Length: 330
Length: 248
Image (tube, rainbow over all chains, first blue to last red; front, top):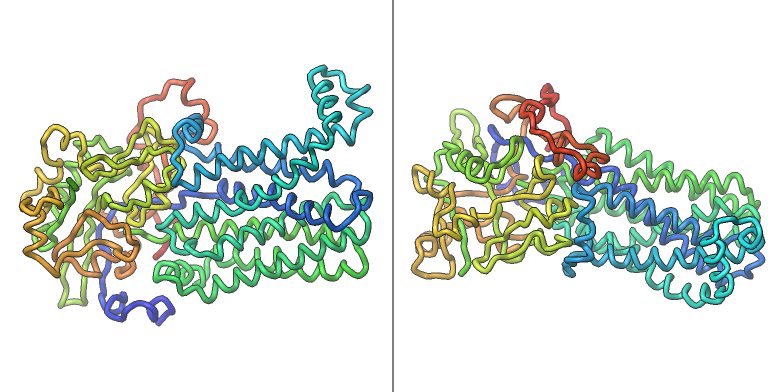
């Protein structure tokens, strides 16, 4: 008798009912697929770099991280645009995306999230323009031949102080932008596996994990202390994220549906392989690699850990997104 | 006024007349269903029985699909019907993730979400839903559940204790009731779904979600290109030799 049968009333189990569907229609397969996985993964990077950069700005002098002021918004901008692109591309009627702004329905976390993410991307764009204008002043003064870009960068350079004024709001806004996907999942009441308060924390850990991993890739010129902090954040984030996945995977007694979903994955198959591949590759291995680099500051090894963490995070998110969709709802 | 449905499973004989009537009335495309009748065999030979369960949108009073829809394409009508505006729908499939009853599909011709509307267009004209009219044994009972004198209210009162809804634990407050059912028919986890449960083939899961002819790029190009007529054969062009995904 499997775990799912234990937690259901015995008279409702298949063993008791001996009920078999003998005629029915074909059911939908996976509805939210890899594009939504990519969407969530990219958003984790887009907001995660903001959290981690804010901490680093607070902890270290700017000279210790010479490229952070412009690299952070650039990475965030690229990741957020990947996120927005795949949000759009996944729609069956992409041009009607405008309806979210023209006919918003405020009880929907999709609507609230779309508005917040748009505002967040706008603010990140401003940070990026200022950051680039400050960093590449000479190029935009003399090398750049596109007049509108030149004047925009000149204007941005003159308003350099705006960066520090906007940053606290960006960090504050990054919290709901990170977490709103968990609210969408909570509103997806057909998928019991996602109906957990832990999803919010899982999103925050994923953002810290992805943010620190992304910044590790550009931290070659940073001080050893700053890089050590990155390794520490990555280690802590993968540790707690892994612990939460393990808790959800083995001890999820939320409902019969959630357990049926997990029982299916526990039984083996491609999603079982993908999940454990993601856990080992993206959580266990980076934890040991990142902690080992904290003493000897091995940049190559730390970057390797960061790449593994990003790949593993994608795999873990992919499994968690898809498996509840395979449960027949009726 | 709050319109509701009640199906007396003791009367239903699984003729699928309602399923066909719904298809015809609402022009539901191939590979999609607003209403379907599921056959479930119960027991072990020779002590066996077969039950027939019509499944459609529950028109919940606390509808998760309405709550998650980002553009109010899914909305309540004054009579309690959860209606869908396919002109506004953006095709995000959020409603398909939210509906605990799997009652919403992505229309393969319009690429928008669609579902049973209790034949809202017929109700507006004072007619009954097509599935009610066609039922040969009057197993489908439709009416105002807030009117104590309506047929459905009388039926519910006459069967006190024997009236059930699907997944009450979801707190969706469905306005679709069953009489004569049991957990084995109404709970999808209480029955097995074996390979080959379809009558004419082994297709258990659809490979497509929305228009199978239109990839991601086509969705962007669709407004600028003529949308050709659909070849029904291609909707059925599946690998039907084995189960694709799922397996519960």
